[in-house]
Image 1 (cartoon, rainbow over the protein chains, first blue to last red):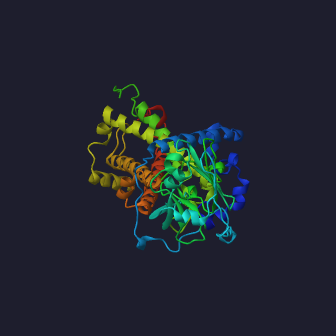
Image 2: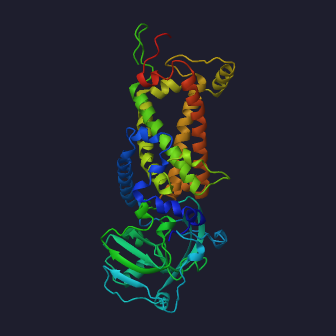
Length: 246
Length: 205
């Protein structure tokens, strides 16, 4: 769930499908830019791709180093909340998955002690907190929303997650998937949100962390797993920067 | 700088020439990829023509932008350090006067250029210092957009996240406007482009 990038990105869907990751630069090399970059041969853009991906991995490490686990994102008042809150995903709004909350069970797996699935009632029985923060989309726009749910750190502790593991991954009902680093997962404002501005944007469960871009806030979560193997993500695997911290 | 009336003088130090062309490449990449990023969520009522952008789609444009930013910043820091330490800034930009720049512009509009090899006229001084400041503002507002949580003090200084986007846009627009004039003059005034590669003033002067 790419949170917010909606109509715009969906409008590009056919192109995106065509532009597989290794092609993601090719079409932009207008203006003779390519000749400046790699000695004129069109075949060389694999090398350019590799260079850019290397830089993206380097930027992952820089952002991880820059991340301050104690620094809180600015918070706002109810009056600042953006209404209507924009819908954004890799598909159109009418294609959002319909989930039956009664029978919903959150699966948890990987490096955790207690793999018992969670019902919505179980999740609501945990301590709840809320936040009003700015969601920044990788496209550039932003919106202020209100989210309420379980502190993700608390949840990870409850399921006996290995908090020294590198990644927390998410698989979603809309076939979206993503992953975040453990320090961001443990940040005090990282929330397993049960109530949001408008419930259809992620019902019944989404991750909300104001320390990362919108597309790192998966919606319609069906499974959470803890791992040391890089899980990637829907947009990340297409060439977007993985860490994408704010 | 080497003096001497007979031998061609070095009017552009090697360090300035190298950082200039590295900067030119970095700005080229930043502006064209930035236009593509802008198109993903236009701030104003227009988009940049796709054929004049870099990256192919948003992910590609961002990859270019966040790779070239290192080149722009590190090269820029090297240039600033050189300029301050070597005395290049003091020799070339001082004294600086808006009044003098205005007078030079009036002269230029009458078809003359107050231009001598190896010496910036008053208008050049103001424009070159101005473009350095514009690039600094572009970098700072870019950081404010990139890291509105980790660098929230800087973002607040820009007036908040959304205002930082506007600042970033107008810093780009300033740079592009400068480039139109700068490149226009560089290719139309005789004998000033080659020294930016060779460092040597043209012999006939």
